[in-house]
Image (cartoon, rainbow, N blue to C red; front, side):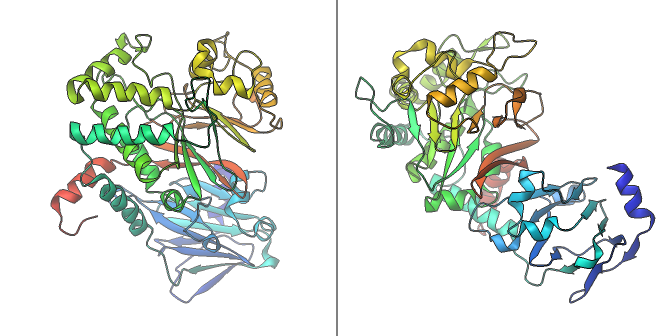
Length: 472
């Protein structure tokens, strides 16, 4: 990449781009200093827009903003692939990456070209070595206010929540969790188990876009970041998407904060609010931390016991009982024709859909699905390729079906890992990292990750509401 940057700049023409001007990339590098944005790259029938994205909470003042690459033909009412260029990043058209194939509505037009774009802070450099096809730079005539769309999404969140995002009163919290539990008890997309309770297998309806998110561990900013990005919330509102949470919503996992439960309670208040406002469109899969079990230990802290004690002190025994009921009513596995998802890993033996329906009567199976880890040198008893293959087959799914889990991050700062263990189509999401948060979402019937920078949206939202009256 450094070599390409040097080559791009060594013979560059440094130009300015004015409204109405259209510059052709004709095999030579074009560098634009302090470019006006958004900027459009025209590639025949395919356009690619570059928007500044400095964040809602003051990131633009702290330094040069990222660039968001999006296809204007896809619109903003539906989830679309968007790519991000941070300062120092380069974009090169390459059809080998599924994220790029999803980015373009006319991929053949884009991949006929050899477009290079480098974000160097105050300079953007472009080159297309296939000059005879014609690739042009211009300013976007009628730009979209992407920040306004994000504010609109967050405004809706605070509206359904009832104002600032602070813990609910005990009375309101109890009524809310009872409503959610009744919704789960009546779920028609889950077969009943032997106790006539909705079973552990949740079917995702055909035609509904799955959007998957990993372990939150009490980090509400990470959830708010996703709700305000792309068209995730808009599609949840229209019922064309379902947000699948891979469990472990609670118990902070950051050093020095393992005993703090306030963030966990607030995350659950917001999740229950969303589940109540968008029935059936928030699918919560049970994780190992979604429990009051004394087995839940981290850094010497019995987080399961501490969570139960905290809720009882703050909300009373009736609320704690309803939380335990929520855990019992939550599904453990989500499935569709092209997707299989659970919190931790595949079962260690052959299972049937009936087994998953009755998972709460099979402690060993429940433990596998919520506790297991990928086999690594440090965890030699973990699962491997054969276990994933057997799980797909036992569910009647093709061998290339995406299998997505959370539970065990592969690094301390990452948020998404694809094809883990060199198992094709096996991906891991972790949603509580401090700097970035990812989802895996279906675009053009293909699942691929999208990564976003985490912003301190909770404090910003509550401050904005408090200083009104203009609102968000």
